[in-house]
Image (cartoon, rainbow, N blue to C red; front, top):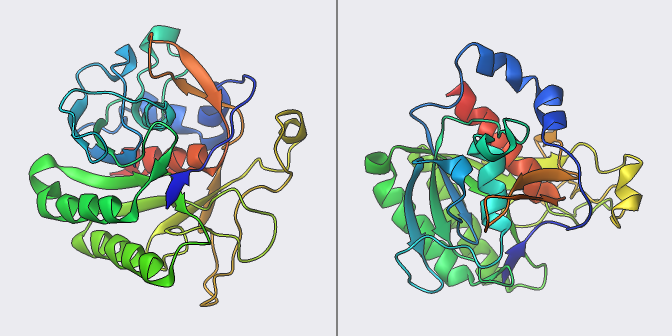
Length: 268
């Protein structure tokens, strides 16, 4: 069983993220992720105005629907951090790569839960189709519960490694089970991919948001691999809401991960 990696409470601004990462300087030079498509494996995506015509496709492994939808909101929020234009907020909540395209792959249901078999099927489809879709990056802000069967864990890790080996940059969340050691969730503990923790998981606002200080998952893994590779802001991030062209706040390594995925899109 997999699940979303986020917390939900009060409000703050995406402007802080762009300032910390200095991505605004790249935007001024014209580097906004043009001609890069990011696959977001999550709860789906809503038709928010901030995405414009940049939703390149949608596959639904949960309800097998053809029209865009997100019955949870997590996937829309993550996608907004990556590629939202900020149009509805006059630029305030602009994402990291506002020129990038999104290919939404729904593998989580309205409760943010998912089935490993379906996720593996989606990953196999991605390997077979990423070139014609121009998908360069996979953002996966989900984590497998520690109680999952060993065979299930190994199956997912093997599928994630195969995506990386195919030439797709995989960016995954470290999970919110910190601060104890060896608390990285699967697939974040995969040795080949970029695992992202939250850089602001111990700041003063964390407690006010109802989060545990140092919530970000930490390594090393059982194989003594240091994780995460990088940290980015993940607390009190405002991004696209699934309905109504509005915005909402979420916190967690789920939110830090698309910051890095968006930065990779700008770099590419």
